[in-house]
Image (cartoon, rainbow, N blue to C red; front, side, top):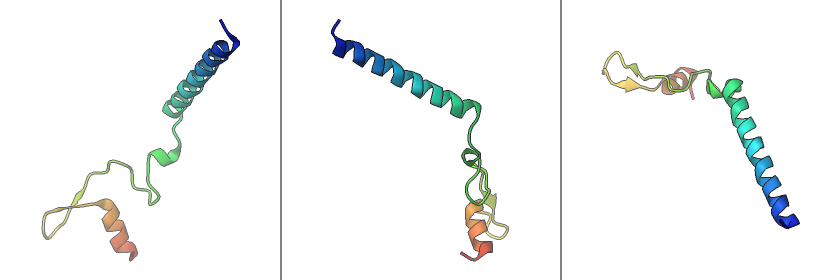
Length: 69
């Protein structure tokens, strides 16, 4: 086996270890930003019902409305 092939196999194996370790770390200990957005609203929050029209309204839209954005 040539040194180039040996180096390439080592490089691929090291890359695989880094990727698997990184994904495992994100699965075990995810950063807080993966749970909420910058306004503190959890991701995948369902829409709320508008009291007058009955249509669905995004929670982010409500936050922007009451904050005055």
